Amino acid sequence: MLGLQDVTAGYGDTIVLRNVDFRVAAGEVVALLGPNGAGKTTLLRTATGLVRPRAGRIEVDGQDVTGRAAHEFARRGVCHLPEGRGIFPSLSVRDNLLIQARGRRLDDAIAEATELFPVLGGRLSQTAGSLSGGEQQMLALSRAYLTEPRVVVVDEASLGLAPLIVDKIYEALQRLVAKGMSLVVVEQYVQKALELARTVYILSKGEVIHTGAATDISSDEIYERYLGTAT
Ligand SMILES: Nc1ncnc2c1ncn2[C@@H]1O[C@H](COP(=O)(O)OP(=O)(O)OP(=O)(O)O)[C@@H](O)[C@H]1O
Ligand SMILES: [Mg+2]
Figure 1 (tube, protein in one colour):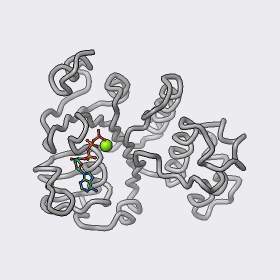
Figure 2 (figure 1 turned 90 degrees about the vertical axis):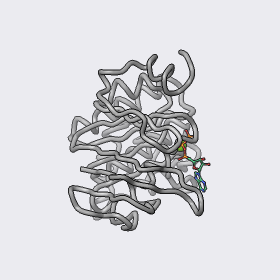
Figure 3 (figure 1 turned 135 degrees about the horizontal axis):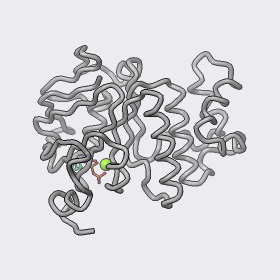
């Protein structure tokens, strides 16, 4: 569905990703793991058109989209949920959803968005910036859902959230997968990511150093071998 072949990318003179091969099949969940600064965010940004690669090829559904703008990736159903969530903090929850309603009636858009997280239904008039961190993440996911994405790329969905909220976010991600969407998650809770993912990529210093089935590796092994910390 989405694939990077031999991609090199960076910022200015700095090369961050080197010869990266990465792919997500339709309906697949991929966990992208690696230490801080490994280039995970840069990979997600490159895979969604926000960073243009210097070399290599990016495909969506077998079509070459290398060098295309982010909105063209979005149009093909590639949705990016950035770290920090990408919501409009000064707008109300309702208006945040309205922006993504795209021709739907607002009531319908709200009903769809709040299907994932009913709690948002009671917070429509509140500014998004005044929601709790967990609610902001829920709003971000609901907005993504409204774009009817085919693959959602989620950067650190659980950052700074309490375990119970993290579980809720992951339940919602699971529901997106059950509806047939593909998912790429960058996640600090390795165990959580492994529960959801079929495939694991580990990135270190901009290079993919491990690719394999999630069932073939344990979180302990990942911490010890790749993240340099014992659990
Ligand atoms: N806009 C930028 N300009 C220049 N360098 C950048 C930029 N964004 C990231 N970098 C550098 O690229 C490298 C990889 O950063 P990236 O954010 O992709 O890593 P990461 O794996 O997501 O890390 P973390 O786990 O801390 O989020 C880092 O050395 C970082 O300083
Ligand atoms: Mg990052």
